[in-house]
Length: 230
Image (cartoon, rainbow, N blue to C red; front, side, top):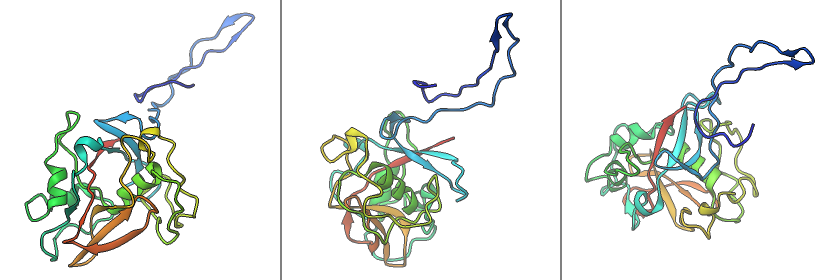
């Protein structure tokens, strides 16, 4: 069945033959069709699904905020001093990481936490594996991928292997291609909310997908996301 919107549906079945219709079956389990990647959803755009348990079963839909309002206008620092920040080591719990940094010494997270966009105020700086899902589904370019990055136990489906040169390919979402209005900047990179060490945190290139750790006081792009429970 095509053309269904992202709301819950059930189905019943009726058999019809020369004697007429049967009684209806019991209703099926409820199913909610997913929106297409890059389409309007939840105050921003649907970026894919995550499994916080890392078991391949989606528990959240990931929403990328609109570029005009949910992306920093200039590149900003992860932290103004290169020191440890407690509670920011999770590769999947972006909300917790980001909440732990909601203060003036952490410009990247504070920018995201301060947003009210599309009627929602629960935007945050994505964790490393959430940012990867954004890259995998919304890659703006046709450039070859970095083949040392991309393993992600929290993606849906989970990825136990790194990117190949051609996978992921450039997104099919027109607005997120490098000629569209919502594309992630390239070759400039984006901060995640995941700390790597006392002085460094994880970033990701949206040209090649390269995931690496960088000094917290350097300035990179920031794009806020939010979650919607499945």
